[in-house]
Image 1 (cartoon, helix red, strand yellow):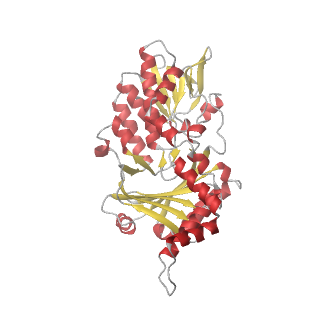
Image 2 (cartoon, one colour):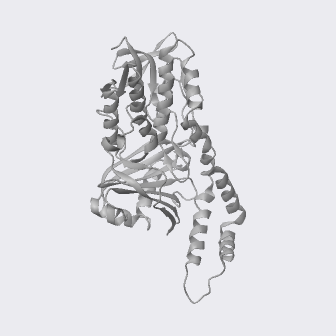
Length: 422
């Protein structure tokens, strides 16, 4: 095994397993290494999977994968300190599912194994193995495993890639800290509480008053008998350290809009991990080199559109681009792997998504998004729906009044920038 491996992939998350599946399916010899005792063992449970990217690789995955609930209802709330303005949609254009990574990741890795991938769990890669300045394998517990190419799919905290000097450490603006809990709640109570049909699911995103005027967002996904609840804040927002991050989640749970949704739910799991949120501008300048390339969160492909969080589908798209480059590289002596990978990325759907939302990260740093806009929306809607002895003013007067309170210039600038970005 140490002498004839085409590709070694480090990390059996969604990106790593998808890349392994595609490479093995094309006839390459693939070794997939996971440091946890099983794939998903290091992943915090809970997330949302948009179907299209994985369905392109495994067309019938919905019939056999351990999915939780199909998302049939979507909410987006702009929070103030005491309330919220919420948009709800029951007519979703895209198919998506809630998943628990501890269940889903082992299944996806098994699909890669079925295609011919060798899976090695419970093993830590200590370093990359170099020959004449080119990555030629990995060192695991003192043993050298040689390969023609190495794929790093370690996640956002890609210590091996940074330690090897392949990429630099991310900036505080390009990486966020996600704090997540898995909460147990009876299936019937989930469906009653979120007004769902059997097996239907809800996705709820929160923005606004979470971290004062600093950037932060939150999410809640319904699983079969669990809720996945979490807060995501850029490191630049967490100036007071880890204590501030933990406090954010507690503040979210105590908010009058969120508190009834999680009432009587039991905490089963708690944890934190890094999330790439820099978008196109946050990608490392070097994405491949002689004998190596990076994919998934290590590449920084997660996209926050302001209204949705796109992580798993972006990971699959990056894995597809990597597999195309690797397959082409193994079939011919030239061009080089970096050239092939950059070409595959440039022509991919992933790159189109990254370019489409390239301005959103800077938009979400605008403090008006978290203070002025939520207050404006809540105040204007309260006046529009008021029924008392006072005559309701015309709509234009209501909007002008609350616009002045929020700061017309500031609010208009945010709206114009949002229209441009979104």
